[in-house]
Length: 117
Image 1 (tube, helix red, strand yellow):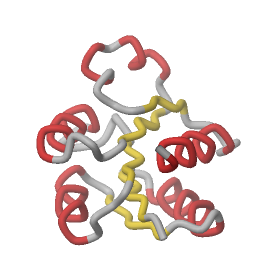
Image 2 (cartoon, one colour):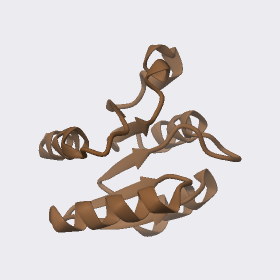
Image 3 (cartoon, rainbow, N blue to C red):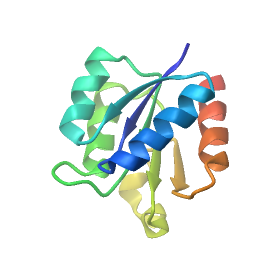
């Protein structure tokens, strides 16, 4: 069973994603901050990370850099409510960019695609 690490400062988003991803057959680890995510990378050994950009403390772009520096092959999906970050050069290191929506089909399809390669 593949493990997904969901990193988002909004508890309701984390829980929604946990329920949806578990129903899709994944194991899910959660983190509300960049620092928690770094610890989860060690303990949960995720196969993919779903990462919010705007978070207090370490933001998602800084965390993306840290993840790619230590585990460059770990797929990271940037998942944010702000489509304007897509043009930001620093987000291009991610494997996918999905704008948050109440319809999680794009996120689920993206995760499935990245975990099959």
